[in-house]
Image 1: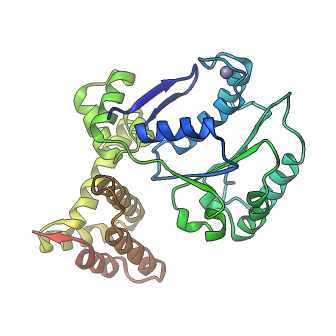
Image 2 (image 1 turned 120 degrees about the horizontal axis):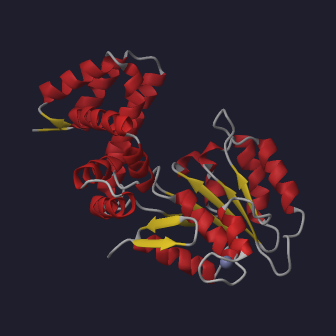
Length: 306
Ligand SMILES: [Zn+2]
């Protein structure tokens, strides 16, 4: 099934067909609380903004009405955005402020209001507890949309109050086609960026815009794959080399997690083992175990030797 590209006048929405039909269903029968979750860069925030635009649209077909224009430039009085602060946290104050804002009626007649809590996995524990009340009884005519990469960072009580909508990664081929069409770059660059993006169109776009970042991502990807693929001796050598540049470890872990999500898409289920091995490595590093020891343990637990 081909991916769906929609241009609403301002935003380019490029999503999996499954996501497109879920958006359409949601527009027809809006819920009160929705959690969009999926890997980084697959377009969760763009999807949230598109849902908000369509629900506040004054009836145009192409994003040209004043409500759509305001939504597209981020100035709609009926679309409220809550994002993490400089410390990458959404604190309880932000949730109280949201609650306060939602006490007022939506602007305009017969209007809906949409509150987007972007990167909700950054909500502090007190903030999540404060949010529970709002999720239980959202004000009339209000839709709450949460986006999250890691929904396990959210309380079960938060997740259970939301309609869950998984935004899956796209295929490499679909992203390559999108980059060729939209950015006019050569096929090899498009293929490299698409492959390194692991199905995250946002990441692919960032890579084609920045050649240095593309090269760096290629190197990180090689290292990450070197940890889990090939002969054990070679993999242990990659671990030893990486341990001498520990600042690259988080990026490698992120690349490995992306790879696991991407492979899961083809297996049609999330394989827990690769992610569990990554979590174990993170815990060991947090516990100040020497990077080389932690990485070697990871290599022994996670890889498939040939
Ligand atoms: Zn409109």
